[in-house]
Length: 86
Ligand code: HEM
Image (cartoon, rainbow, N blue to C red):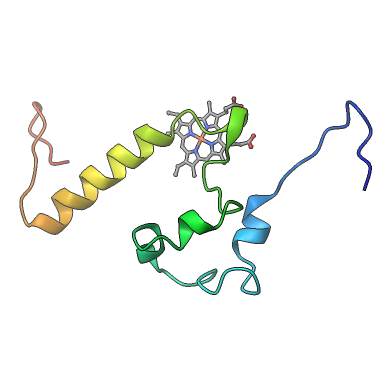
């Protein structure tokens, strides 16, 4: 396939991320794929995109969500200066 110079293209990751023919875990909650190496074997699995267009918020998101997950699953809680829980 030839793509003309200057053409705009859209890569709709949600479409192939949910393709069960490509990813057996496509429609399952299976976070283990990020720990056991399966996700890293799939270069087309790009929740934050990749290359020059990669999401600049990626590390903020991973830090925030893992911190929140650690707090909520550890049984402890964290309180901000104004007294609200986070
Ligand atoms: C779960 C959370 C998030 C996901 C899954 C996500 C995913 C993405 C993806 C896939 C892109 C690339 C879009 C493209 O191909 O053009 C993108 C771009 C971008 N994201 Fe995120 N994002 C998340 C959160 C955030 C946050 C928290 C911020 C800011 C603090 C952020 C800032 C941006 C910006 C500014 C771009 C555009 C980058 C550019 O065009 O150069 N994102 N994000």
